[in-house]
Image 1 (tube, helix red, strand yellow):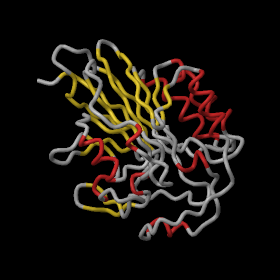
Image 2 (cartoon, rainbow, N blue to C red):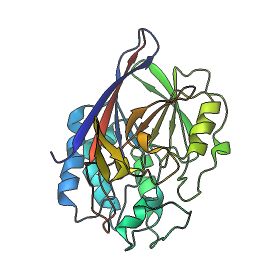
Image 3 (cartoon, rainbow, N blue to C red):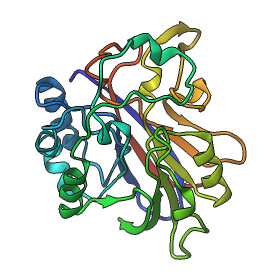
Image 4 (cartoon, rainbow, N blue to C red):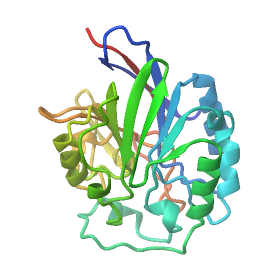
Length: 272
């Protein structure tokens, strides 16, 4: 395979509950031409997850909806949760790839509209839950999970007030799902005492420098601190945060340095 499998175990479930294998992927940026990535995505089903979570940016081409659905294949038979990112709404445009490393001044260079409505309709028809400004309660194994999500904060489409409030009383675990992990969303989910947040968007920094103990991200393309650019992290008083480094890149910035494409499996297990 041409991607990294990131595996982590998190003791977050109530005592006596069975493990839950969560497959978390993000930022596919698929076009019909990306044959090797399509094959990689099809292999995700071999990881045998109990729950699939996508944190957006499925698309990078107006004709890519059938490509996405075909690549996901058997994963669509499993329980799934999803939100959208900016690249699900607008196609990529040529730009200086090094601008990704510059300070974000909030200006967006948007391409043509993409058929996100068709993708949302297809995914929900197959049983996945659209969490863009929505809350849902699902049961995986013997654990009741309340999940809530926001639309993309990078395009200022987020409005956490639409899903805010204490978790459902029936829930054993409360999770948040969002594309771009801006601090305003993390802080809002912290106030509501969620347990775990899933996000993408960062590409793991996309360009990382060698650093003692591994490598260091130069950016997160949002206001999340660079040290949290990928993987599972936690700050005192906040929920756990898992950021997927993602599988793809914009077709016009196909550069990843020390940040290979990756997919994650989080094994949620009972606490001690």
